[in-house]
Every structure is written in structure tokens, then in C-alpha cells.
Length: 179
Image (cartoon, rainbow, N blue to C red):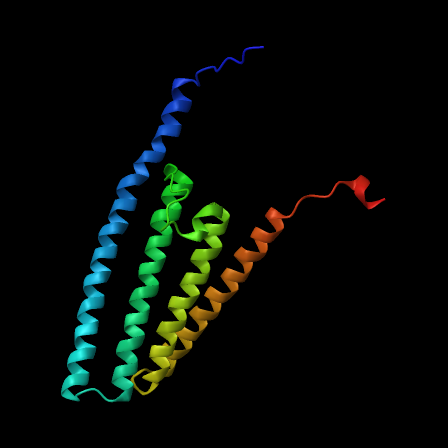
């Protein structure tokens, strides 16, 4: 028997096509990525210049290295959101078999993306917290407590997101399977 495909109503087609409105947002994140590359190169230049002229002490070097790591982690977050979000919400990228395809892209969906983003934010927050504690003498107690509290909130949020994701992804058991 021949299967007929019916055409969705115009409103449904319009709603489905509206996903392309996110394209400028993802292109904007690519521009933000370029800005972060520029920022990284400036920080790297400060590190190399400071090391060459011996104007940086160990703490100064550590703070610049942490700033570089911070830029890389934020850049990774941008890539995750740009590629994962586009693939999940706009259109397939058809990268199967491409040697450079990120391995996480095979199983990306909105739920996985949320957990990965939460983990990335915790990593970024950890770097900021470490930079603050290395320079703790330059901050008042209120700032230190606030940054520590915000980090704990990020941790608890990530745990809650992962737990909810686990609950949602578990197969539901029927009452008959308990007998």
C-alpha cells in the first residue's frame, strides 16, 4: 500500500521554519569566539613579555596562565553551544564520518547539552574562584564569600540538572513489571 505524505498546515510550516531565526545568534557566538581568540593572544603576549623581561613573579605567571585557561574554557563553551545548539535546534550538520567531528556530537540532544553546559560553567567558575583565592588579599571578605556561594550554587544547579536528566531518561516501569 502506498504511503501518502500530507503537507503540514501553513502555520505548522511557519513555526518549524522559525528555527532558522536562531542562525544569527549562532553566527554571533562565532564572532564572540573571534573576540576570545584575540583576548587569548593578548594574554599570551603579556605572559611571554613578562617572562622575557622578568617582570612577572610566580603569582603573576599563575594568574595569567589561569586567565588563558579561563579563555579556553569559555571558548570551549562557545563551541559547544554553537555546534550543539545548531545541530539540536536548527538543522543537522551531516558530519558523519568526518575525521574532525567531535565525538560528543554523535549523541547530543537538548538534555545532554544542558548537562555539558552546566559542567563547563562549573569549570569556568572554578578557575575564577581559584584566581580570586590566589589574590585573596586584594578582595574583601564579602566578595570572597559571594564568589564561593555563587560557585556552590552552580554546583548544586548542575547536580539538580543532571539528576532531573537522569530521572527523565530512565525508562518508566509499568505496574505489571513489579509483580
